[in-house]
Amino acid sequence: MLDFPGLEGITYLDSAASSQTPNQVLARMEHYYQRDRANVHRGAYALSSRATDAYEEARQKVADFLGTDADQCVFTRGTTDALNLLARTLPGKKIALSVMEHHSNLVPWQQRPEAELIWIEISEDGRLDQASLEAALAQKPDIMTLTWVSNVLGTINPIQEIARRCREQGTLLVVDAAQGVPHLPTDVKELGCHFLVFSGHKMLGPTGIGVLWGERQQLEKLPPYQFGGSMVGLVTREKTTFADLPQRLEAGTPPIAEAIGLGAAIDFLRARGMAKVRQHEKELTGLALHELRKIPDLRIAGPQDPEKQGGVISFQVGKVHPHDVATILDRRNVCVRAGHHCCQPLMRRLTDMWTPGARAPIALVRASFYLYNQPEDVAQLVEGLQEARKVFSRG
Image 1 (tube, rainbow, N blue to C red):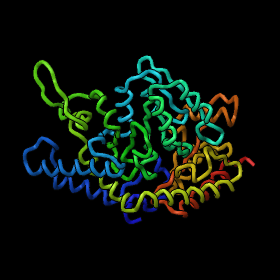
Image 2: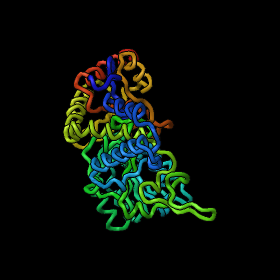
Image 3: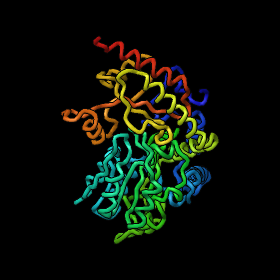
């Protein structure tokens, strides 16, 4: 595609890790560096004013994309940074989370003093186990933190219903939307969660930028996460007062160019329409599932239903190690991910379900689709997997 120069000559199926970046985003960031390069908020000159306007315009674009107000959108370094912010500042000891969580939505909560983690298990088809979810809710956790879309299984979790249940009993719901916002139409008011986080680099934007959205009354309760410039009101020798939201949670010089780039990525996505992005991925996922099921000894994790999952498919190819599969695919310029995908507890759980008693957890090959992928990319994947079977066949 002309908009994505990085895709020339390759089949890129690793958008769940990082998406490609269109020319429009690169051009907007270059314009900032060449024409508007200055710090924001503090400069009393035209160049700084232009930079500030571009930075805050990007925040407004994020807010419009989420169906919310700009002052509820805090710029962070990414999903991991946003989750660390919440893990450091939200009150409570009882934290419910699922076994499908990415390490970035597990490890920060583990580090909280006296944290009591309540685990929600998964079913054989890779969805939240309903009995386990009910048991977790029954314990009335202070916080429930869940992925919207699993980066391994592709599972789309029923966030709206879970949010309703959480609100009924006073549990704060944090949603890791790193795999959701880039692929699904998003309205935070409809979702009903208290906090939602995501990254720019998974939605056509640059690295080093993410967003923490929160309900205003909940954001107001958060103490500053980091301290320094930009987030202060009055500073004396004796004490400091802090700025209003969102600056109170954005200490230091912010990622200006990256925020502007994220705004341009949102422009690109809105021009295409998120409903169309979702429909395109459903069609590709359905095609890929149909073709992958034809390959002998290939086992797929997750729902295996395009209506219930995002554009992510993880699988094993017989007894061939995923790294070997990925190497063969790479020789054909097909880019996939292989390993535990920053989800080691999930890999252990899948091992227990697939090969009970195995000592080492399994690893998986993952192919993930985005708006720039086409049916011929699925064909390239399938041909590469067939070659991998032949190369490593012992028969």
